[in-house]
Length: 99
Image (cartoon, rainbow, N blue to C red; front, top):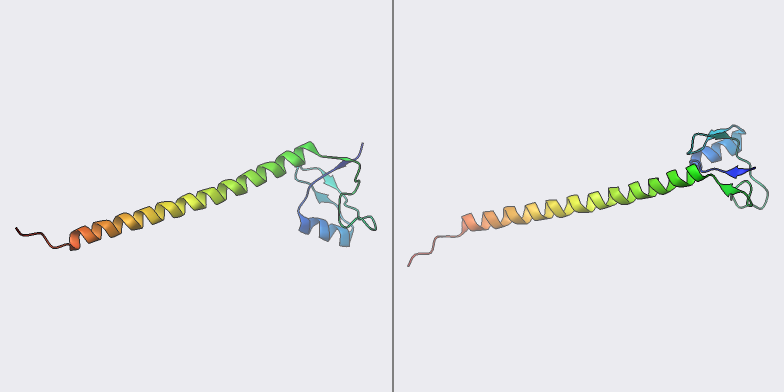
């Protein structure tokens, strides 16, 4: 049974030119092929996608989302710290009220 794998685009391009094999996300080694008129799509359009490659690709997407979320949260923390510092600075700069 033929299974299609995911691999880095650059590795696929290099292998298509040189004819070598590459390592898929799952660790399997394969030689990519390009059918005329395929538009760079899967080697065997009727075959299933490797379940392990698909799971790893999904995890990579989740990791990218989490990194973006971390960056957004870090920015919010920096903004809050800046506002807090400004508020403290303003409080110290205010002149005491004399009655």
